[in-house]
Length: 302
Image (cartoon, rainbow, N blue to C red; front, side, top):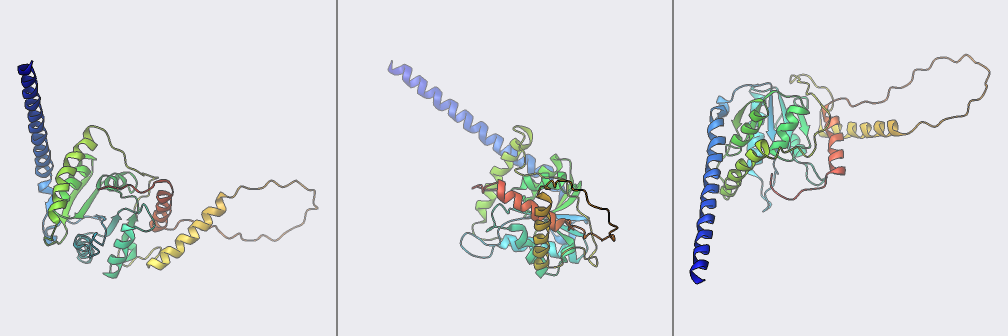
């Protein structure tokens, strides 16, 4: 009896060791696949970044958990502003998390880029970019993009490019200007795990984005074109007008009893037109309100 138990324990440990070895090999192979298949699409210096009509800028918090300025956020903003300044791209899609009113990545990016001289007409905000996967699916299906330049850190670009190309998009990557910071190894390790999870998202369980929404094709404008809101305050004001107009349209019409009245000739009066969403900033704000209303915050990584 004792020998039988020993044999069982030995076989159990051997099976666990085999599974651990297999998982390790799959983990390494998955990372190598993602990195190797995307390396030729990544440009490490801004001067080498391939021009495109539009760049997708991935959101992140502009503060760290310790209350310091997030160097990764400002690296992405510096690189994005230079891409516009050097006319390597003509428009920026700022995609990030805005699941609660207290946390708004796209607005933070918008303000910082506007402060750096990027015109409002050359920026579009996506408030439902809850993850890298969500950002890219919405870029294709909501904003109708088939090609783009991706702007983020070097350790993030392989996964972002891999997802985009698996979705059928023609993309290249531009590494955000960066310097090594303390604790970055945690992000890199987390990225290794995320790459393997991405393979499952794409090829096994068929992940869907949290919030998709109707198509909103991006209208590209030159720097001297200024449609819509030119400042953050203007965009908030127009968003308030949009909400009021939507509220008016949502009111049911009341049926009135017919009364026989003598016909009188009345002068024709010009009816004021109801305000309609004027630009992508207003539509994005309306989308953000829907997200905050129906999709509660999710705790965890992206």
